[in-house]
Structure formats: C-alpha cells, structure tokens
Image (cartoon, rainbow, N blue to C red; front, side, top):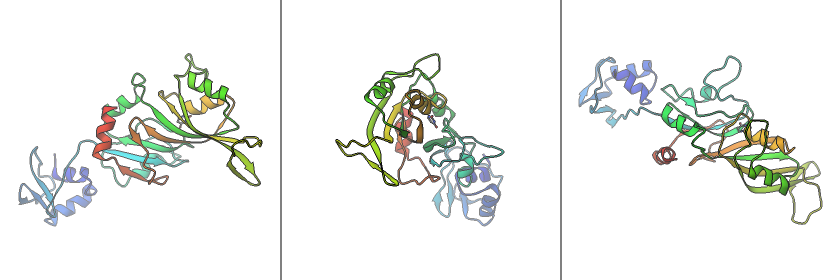
Amino acid sequence: MRLDKYLSQAGLGTRLEVKKLIRSGRVLLNGATAKKPEEKVEEGMEVLFDGNPVIWEEYEYFMLNKPAGVISATRDSRDRTVLDLLACVHSKEIFPVGRLDKDTEGLLLLTNDGILAHELLSPKKHVSKRYLVWVEGEITPNDRNLLEKGLDIGDKKLTIPAELSNINYYVEDGFRMRRKEKDEEKPVVQTRLEISISEGRYHQVKRMFAAVGKPVQYLKRLSMGTLELDEALAPGEFRRLTEEEIKKLKKT
Ligand code: URA
C-alpha cells in the first residue's frame, strides 16, 4: 500500500494532509525518513510518526448514539445521514449495520466489516436488540402476554417472543408527567419499558405496540448483541469500539 494511503487510513489525516507530514520528514519507514507519498509499505514494515508507531487496521468500528432527525443511510439528497455525523473521522467505506427509523435514537454500529455486519443482521442468527420504549397508555398484563408470546403484526408469521422489563407507569400531574405511585387510582397516560427482540423486521417495535393499541411515542436502541450503548455519548456523539467490545461482538 502507498504510504500516504496507509497513513490516511490509519487516521492521521486526509491524503493531502499526510503528504505534508511525509514531506516535513516526520514519518519513518523501517527506520529511514520517508521522502515520498508513493513509497510502498509492505507487510511487517515499521511505520513511525514523530517516533510513535502507526498501526493500520483493515476494519473500523464505531458506535454512534444516533439522534432523532438523521437517517441511517450512507447518503441522501435531502436529509442528514449518520455518515455525515462521522464524516470527519472515518477513512474507509463504513456503513451502518442495520437501520433505525429517522425518529429513533440510540445505538448504531458503523463499520466496514461486512462479515460482522452480515452475522449481526442475519435473520438466522436471532441477535437480540434491546430498546427503551415510551408508549401511549397502559401496557396491561394481557398486552404483555401477547408481546411476550408473539403476535400478529400483519406479516405472514407471528413475531418471535419478546422480553419486556423495567416497566413503569406514568400519570398526569398538572402540566407534567410523573411515575405512578403504588395503589394510586389515576389513569396511566404513558408506559415506559424495555423490550428485547431477536428479529429485525421493518418498523418492528412500533408495529408490535401498535398491534396492542399502544402507539410508540419515543424509541431508543440500548443494545445489539453484546454491544451496549455507552450512555456517556450524547445524541450525535460517537466513539470507536474498544478491542474488548469488538472481540465480544464477534463471538455473539
Ligand atoms: N423498530 C422500529 O419500529 N423502529 C426502529 O427504528 C427500530 C426498531
């Protein structure tokens, strides 16, 4: 691989920027000062920038806390895409692993590792995805039973059983909403809960709650397989996955 491409793909800057770094004599190739951007980096060669090793990785992995209003595509003529949010950092052809709706927030993995993406998205693998959901009205024991057993959302097959957890009920209190107290009589206006599903059908979570008559008001993905959304990331922020996260995800 050409040295300028190697440095750029290792994250040192654009091709133009790294050409300047090479010309300034700050890059060593196997102990000798590199002179030209077109010099070749062969396997096993040592590349140093200002004395620090430059490691080129074939694959890049990012977790994004997707904000609402951005679409999960690589490019779009009208809307801002998740790739626009990462434009300044990635150097390879990365893409989002699966889709979140435009108004959905939360965990989105972006990578150029097609094999991992395929494994995570394969319908046969049943990789679990956990969402935080706010729905209108009260999720009753009967709704819960239906959602957990599998229900008809208008496709040929029923949904695979889901798992509901952390269910909390909200009531109106003046202009605000608050958690319902135990034994309180007020009507529930919203239920907040987590749901884990192991399929990835179109608008699946929204359609599941619509099927029990409780429209989704807010949706955020919290995890995918072993990968948990880093809650330190505000909507729109992203970071690279750690080695540990990548390793665990590949085992999923
Ligand atoms: N299910 C949905 O309905 N929307 C999403 O964005 C993700 C899962």
